[in-house]
Length: 539
Image (cartoon, rainbow, N blue to C red; front, side):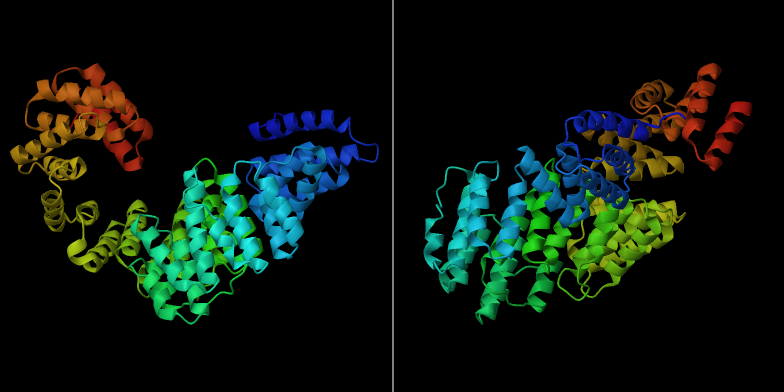
């Protein structure tokens, strides 16, 4: 039987494991561990997280303490949210002396959640030896607060050398001041941070919860000022929170995870969010951040399940709907993505962004008339604040729906609002060239677009085609050839290039370009271009 790349990787991993098992204690069940590990690796490579987790669990049970299995099991269990397997894997990795630095995050969370303060301090000391050392002063200040030492916040150095440590020190000093009853000082400090650009919804929401618990609801609402839908929802449904180390450290972890969710440190963001949920299982902001990290890491099924666990009556429900749209789209589940986008667009308090997102999905699904209606809603909601992109999108959807007369004013409005935006110029210019309308004006629009973005293949094609349509083949052909070199698989560019060659009597090159166009063409385009191959252009 031929090995697929997936099973080949699993087999290679199995050879490594077999070598490692040869040095394991005699009580290890080598065949069982090997079989479970191979199945787990194959499932892991195929994105079948549940199967992979069970495979790693079985392999680790058959070969306790095996570091090679434990490394894989730890990462997969973290993605899956299987904390028992995480802890079993961590124990094996510690025993082998190869526990990764982020293990300290889970150790800290477990110890604080169980109120094992001595172990919590020891775990924080281990964290101080790794890349997350900048969190240590703030975590220790919260542990001091838990012991009754409300003055622990004063130890947080606002002038720390590390910019990250300085930021976390300032934010957590303000939160601990509020938690300790020094609300005026804490609120003043937070307002200063927000004014200085440190505008974290996580920190503002945490401060507001602590203020509500002290009966200072007006101060809490003031901290949550703004038109962001999450801030609006938080203001409307404010709930207090008990000031304790678990609360402060969980928010700290979510705050850092939010900074990492879009970068290469996504695995660390996942660990931080899992730890935050150990400390506060009700924190839906941690769930949303976790869902984003999982989605960016390719675990779309887990990300969707995480978003679906967000409280539908809580302040993050609308944000969860918006995130579900993104995740479902990435997963290729267009129908569910459209359903989620429609719910988000029609939800109470939904704004222009939600309607625009629905329009984009409908456009991508080829439902241009419905997309135009969604963009109309977005324009209405945005009012005077509507920018050129919405006008361009609505005009484009109407044009794609065959409603050119209705589309043109919106495209012209987009150009009027953004005369230096090459894509708006290109769309309006090319649409008119295709219809043989206002050719001189359209060509001028495309020349301006080409000056703004001279390396854009689509714009080069549009301008080249405009020259061909106005009889200036000498200027048009080099542009079309350049566009085809940049985008050799583009159907429209190759089609235009073939027409230009044919007009110049270069029949062999024309047919070559048309054949290139048919490679990626849809059925209707392929039939149309195939007719040219047989008989040349209709005119």
